Image (cartoon, rainbow, N blue to C red; front, side):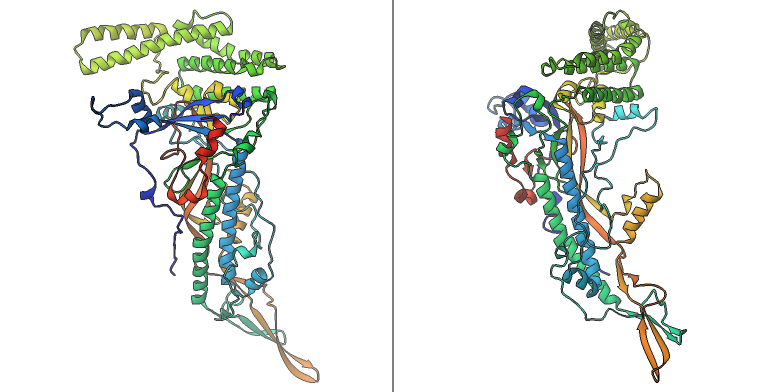
Length: 638
């Protein structure tokens, strides 16, 4: 049997997927504008990203070809365009977008199956659905749960290796959409309007599809049955069945699939609300009533099509936290996340870095002037000190350079910070000297200084082998393990983002998948129970490609009416209408599907999963998006 896989006009040609950049070209998360006072002035919060190759040339300044060699340099106008601003969206709004993406897939799945099964079983199903309009409840998927993904393409491999050396593998997570391309319930009636899959479908009686299987009874005794009765008809028109299935699949995988891609594009690329006036009306006039205005403000990075890039929206849970109990629970959850990861991946010295910098970040958060005078803040600050004080003091006693750090927690943290800066300088000097000796092994002065530096490190650290908390390369700025751990932190409010230096992003992108409809992989192996397996089995069995035929029983009896012989058909004694499998038996799917996820990115680190440039679209998407940069400009004031 021939399967016609005709990709619609929406399919992406990779060669037209936009500009190609060097491997080191990256977008770095930088300088978020979370100033609450800006919100009260009617300015929407935003995130800034930097295009690294352009930033490098911009930092070198203009290049005059008449005075210097400008080969390999970007044009100055291009180098200046290295900053891009992304407005923030609410977490709940992105969950609603994810729900709509699910519904779009469910609609396609229903249209696909019911087109095939109705055309195959024409005229019986045509009468039931296309003429009588029999249908079930409307598709109404619930809001998908938030699920943070730690992207394997983003985590520093050195951190990942260290974190997995002990304590078992570190969970990198999955796309939040994994396992959700399915119906919530598989019903024996369509959950979309039959008009959506009956378009162009007429009643078809000829050619005949089958001669029913039958058995003959005489006076209640069986005297004959056709081969395979009641499971198989006496004769079945396989060629016509194959033609009907192929025709229906081609219809679904061209027209209905194109509708799916268009619907997904409209969902992802349409802001909610769609005007600056409606968005600004969501902002209140004081801190305590900022709340969580529901807004979805997407930024396409060439769009979500296969090979293009993704659609991105930085998210917040709320603009400003007013529930101090919830705020403290979140800060403690951040502490627990950090501690779990650094216990696996860090040395004692790095644990000191963790405690000091966590304390300083949380203290900066709690000292924010937006919290001034808020009842309960003193208790929150006391909880913070109790959380950090004991483990930090315990660690300082095991490292010689830190043993002199005493006093209250603020003094202890300040002293430890100064000592850690000294260690950083020694490590950097050690690296520089090793570089000098690599180039000139006979340099006696460098050998002497390196020996002195090693001795100082040994004296300050107690002779313990310690890793360098600050990496030498520029790809991992800051206290790199402290920064890498932020990838496990959940979405939060603007003050938490600002204090701890990270942001959570919603991303959507298409992937090419070869599977079945329903997706045979959708069984959740983490929940092995009878209900789980039965639901999965029912979903698979209820969507098999089958022709329904009705076997007959011909019952011959002698009746006294006066005496005569009567032969009449009756329902089969063995059972009702029987299914007959028709190739391909299950519906295949080998095209793009849209997935979504939420990822957390530390400041100064690369945004994963993007290509091209923000606010650009591949040509196939140009009809589905407004000029979003122009729309957001009055919102951001940039």
